[in-house]
Amino acid sequence: MKKFRLIATAALPLIASILTACGGGGGNAGQCGGSAEVCNGSSGTTAPPSAVTVLPAASTLENLCQVPRTGTDPFNNNLPYPDKQGSLATEKQWLRSWIDETYLWYREVPGNINPDSYTNPIAYFDVLKTFALTPSGKAKDQFHFTYPSAEWGAISQQGVELGYGLTWSRSPGASLPRKRVIAIVEPGSPADKAGLRRGDQLTTIDTLDFLNSSETAAITVFNNALFPEKTGESHTFVFNRNGSTISAVLVAANVAATPVQNVKTIATASGTVGYLTFNDHNAVSELQLVDAMTQLKTAGVNDLVLDVRYNGGGLLYIASELAYMIAGPDATAGKVFEQAQYNDKIRPDPATPFIANAVGFSAPKDAALPYLGLKRVTILTSAGTCSASEAIINGLQGIDVAVTLIGGQTCGKPYGFYPTPNCGTTYFAIQFKGVNNKGFGDYADGIAATCNVADDFSRALGDPAEGQLAAALSYRDSKICPAASVGVNLQAGFAPQNLRLVRPAVKEIAIYGRGRL
Image 1 (spheres, one colour):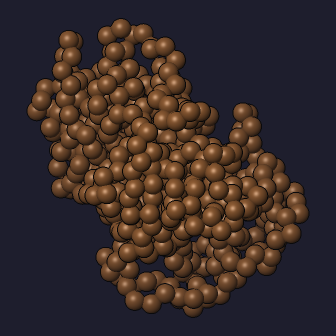
Image 2 (cartoon, one colour; image 1 turned 90 degrees about the vertical axis):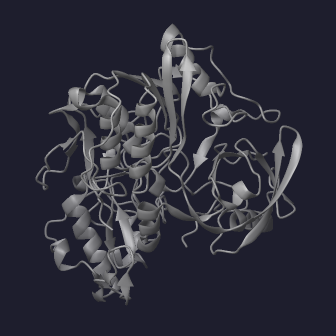
Image 3 (cartoon, helix red, strand yellow; image 1 turned 135 degrees about the vertical axis):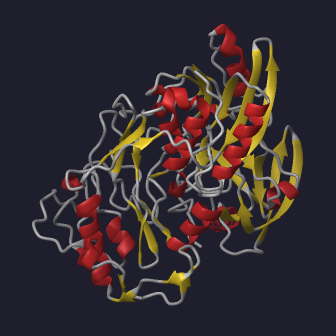
């Protein structure tokens, strides 16, 4: 199990190297420092970009592995692994050719990095990207990462992850006291069975003070507990819940996430409003979204609040299906949901339409999708709303559905991937930018909220009194944003509006079509 470490040195308490909100990287990403510098080997010295003139075709080098896998792949119809005997050099050669052929900004990849300076393919991959900056000063490519292929298959196809069934939000930076609060508890998970709730703030792990400890030994305990590596591993967590102490022994398990939750209708003076929480565009979500939309259509809703504040993205076909189910055939017929723009070496694909029939990830293939036929929709967003979730917003705006965003500015990721496996590692390098029916896709710094409303950890998601949902229901009729909110203070100095989601990069991606496993 790949562990996303929290800290590099004891001198910088709990610096997250896991992804938070829309941060970048994975694996060994970031080892080169930042801005326009690139590593030339492990020394960290810089080298200017230069053109690589002759590279072998990636197809001639794929699956030539230093250590070939044996047996069959459970995530590819149990077919034998395609691995053949190769070497470390062939794996790195494949990477360089594949990047040159498919990476959106291949011209900006330094051409004179010495592959022999890198002791494994992932470290080499981490520097095969652009190091340019956006106009706002952010890294142009924040989303260059890897994942073990077996884990990626379990997450993308089955929605299964090793852990406790918790999604955390935490304060950015390394200042003490640390602030980490539960954002989501998966139904039926170890955390759910232990009675934990959204809004519980972590204070102690295995008898050590999580809020203030900075010793190396304590940091090691925290990392091991927060990111277990095997099922059955147990740790004791203590939380503050509105001044009360809650203790729970959590045992790590393979948790099947429920991407669609809290489907309900809310009666208002101006009609019946549907609501659902949507947390992940994975294969499992297709059938759950169909069931949710069927339920809301049967209930006769005339408006919808879609809560994607914690949804980092996933399969773009799922995003297209959901956008169709919101807008219906009259608004979407003949329209583009998203057009992928590639580098100049790749022939453009046909545009992705608003998909009206189930692709077959988990719903019956080719079954007609239910639809609400709405001309407006309210979407709850945050800095954790990324990629395929942003594509829903952009796609609907491209066909003139009135989209109101309540919460916070989105992540800013109009880019996507074809996850590509080689020798047991799946590589994610940006390969396209997506634009809507009007040709717009320039939101690398995020999509601004209509009303800025802080996350309210004091109430469950879907509670009509929860801060963002309450603001959404009010704004429907008044068109007035509430006064700037700061959320609920769980402890003195604890400002929820400054929290960021804790999740790996694999949770913040857009995957074109079915993706490759």
